[in-house]
Length: 161
Image 1 (tube, rainbow, N blue to C red):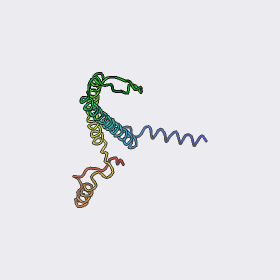
Image 2: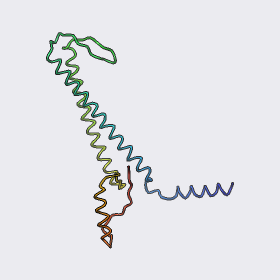
Image 3: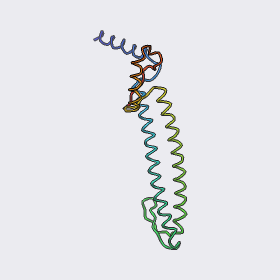
Image 4: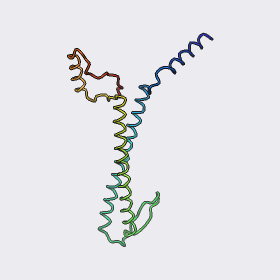
């Protein structure tokens, strides 16, 4: 038992004292996947809010054509409330403007996240599965023809599916 635990302790100290220059490939992939998921969720939220703007526009256009004193119903916090068109129309227009501002904010955040993703991919040489397959085949054929191989980049990258 003592010999077994001492060999385990030796292995753990070797792995801890080994390569500390950067994160492991699994950590790189996990971080990249998390960043991609964040960008996807932002895009999803942006699309959802675009649909809300379209619905608001449709209702606003419809209410502009009716008598301002006509009664209408509005859902507020899960409760259906009776109001007049002249009370509801300004509220709908301000909601639409606020949603537009939120969409602009989300789109700028998405662009920032896209730049971060690109920088992260370049830093860790991440390639996606199916990305540049024809390009990679052309490069491998060119490198096999090139006997010196000094001009080609090393293939120490991470492949993400």
